[in-house]
Image 1: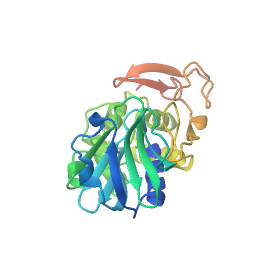
Image 2 (image 1 turned 180 degrees about the vertical axis):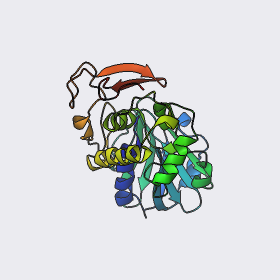
Image 3 (image 1 turned 135 degrees about the vertical axis):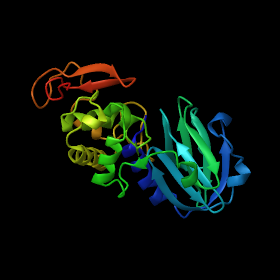
Length: 266
């Protein structure tokens, strides 16, 4: 599933190619992708601004807001001329002023798009974005103190902090030397963990995200960050720090990659 760095990469490209343009026509090719959207509600609206919260893409239109969740395999792609026949996995087509086309492509059909009155209010239940300036050291520390969960489960929950998924949680906990089952209240240096998380996310954004299988940017290109993983997907290989063998085990309901030497269980 695309996580914060992949979604942020898409959002930045959408700001360059979509923001300020008018959607002349929207065509739905698979109705279950759209929870409450009639194409006529979108036709003619201009995309005033584009934002993100956690893993959600936010399109602020003239009259309403659109929330896009890529889920497992969703892609937003600029495909050029409108005369081009739709791909078999295209679920939504935006015909833009100027003749270009933006499509929502989703092989597994888990992606969802919503049309709402106010996107920010609709996502109030989602935790503060990991890159939000308000996620200060003291705020992060307080979130950990208030949680009874293990740190991996907490970071994946999207309730206190949003945007992190399995890839970047595993990478951040490795670099911070924290075992994934460590209870939040037991973490001795929350400030260091926060700094590591920010560094992991920033590096991944700089590398245009990570492509494990389906992720592509809006021009169809793969990310590069997967070439720099420390633990994710490296089970059975030696740790880049100590040489111990990277382990994969099920924790917090997810396959979890860690080094038993660098991340000893407390």
